[in-house]
Length: 593
Image 1 (cartoon, rainbow, N blue to C red):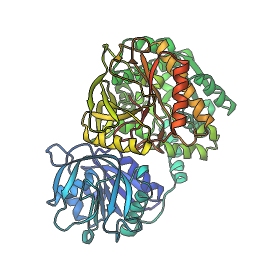
Image 2 (cartoon, one colour):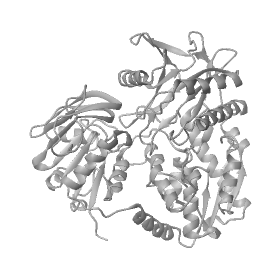
Image 3 (cartoon, rainbow, N blue to C red):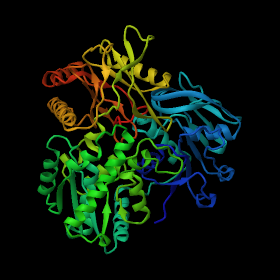
Image 4 (cartoon, one colour):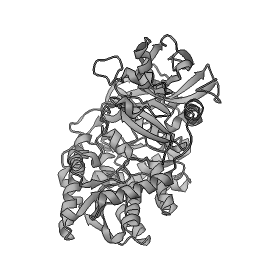
């Protein structure tokens, strides 16, 4: 079928594939190419979009683009790093202006790219570098309080660029309008793509890839693996598909029993439950580094898969391993040419990558985002209760239980510029993302009166200005931290039991308050911060997202926050403090590890 194409040039940005997602959602086919693409392969595109990237455009090792691309006379839209490419290529000036998360944009020119938008709009930022001066021939279209050249254009050549990220959900209607203006008004592309078209292509691809072999799928019970299981059953038939749910000991309360019942109630009788709690716990004994945790868990999954194949007398030569991997797993694991590794997902460890190279793994959903996976689930007529479940990471509670090697003082320093609020930096690290690059930095604790809007403003300011901070949490119960310690702590049954029960309390209250559908996900995290009697603290992380590529803290009322926190403290004397994570993504990731 002949169809119009928008080409995305991937400079290694976390959101490169998300741009393709947004273009496809407007009904136009999009394909991703690398920055060293042969120009002849993209010369028939209706438009080109330059993605973001983790590097500084003016360094020798940064990814470049051929001058020939600019001579194709095809409309180009640059985003973030792509915005800076235009400035660097044509004589503009680049400098350091960090902006992360929510930002107010002032639109000066609404005649082309910004047609139909408001004079002020909220956008999502994720950059350290910025364009200080537009190159000759370019006009400035929009600015922020800190960055004068937040968007620019050369209308004659049909070149446009923006420093912010219109592709992320949290740039809202503005982002959608920018893509509509670029794709339909500037590029003159026609609609010719839909998810149903994609699903038909995917079915044909799966049949071709599997051939005469069968498929053995690791089913966690989350949305991705369950949709993958249902999809493979519908295409290949249940006699050629076996599902294996491994109970790692890191599941939520009664999770494995619920997964088994839910799937068997739907007629999936080709699912086995394999208990491996002791094996996973043994392998993670005395491990505190989050990257090491993820890699050990990924390897354990593979080893137990091999053990299960032997137990069920399945010939490995005739059985492909399937995974419910989705695109955020790939990109955060540094899965494209110029992308930085934010954190290694358990389904992207080195051994998995080697099996992929050998053609021994099939991943039907690897090009999709969570919202698209849910759409596939709806097309397959899976129940709403299953499709709309809160996401749960493969490593489970193991990466929500922060570990620490050495007992030490908890607070490293205070920031005095936010009075009457008290801001303290905790000497423990979590994974974040700044400017498309991995951040492994400290959280800041804010103590004071609860005012969500004020706290959000402080979060943005602190993470933008403090290079060693990538998260901000609110001290819900007003606990003091002058004499508390970070205790030595590794994974053990007691630590996980407390987290599991606290997670259940949080979920129960959120359900009671009818917030389960409004909150996209609510990780509950435990860390070894406290005094000698109550050694642990809890972090509540409710987020608003669609695809996990961007997120903002979901606003909980003070009464709900207090209700959850007081009940946790009342039922668990081991808990010293309860925190509410205020951080957007970026600069924080959704999970702490």
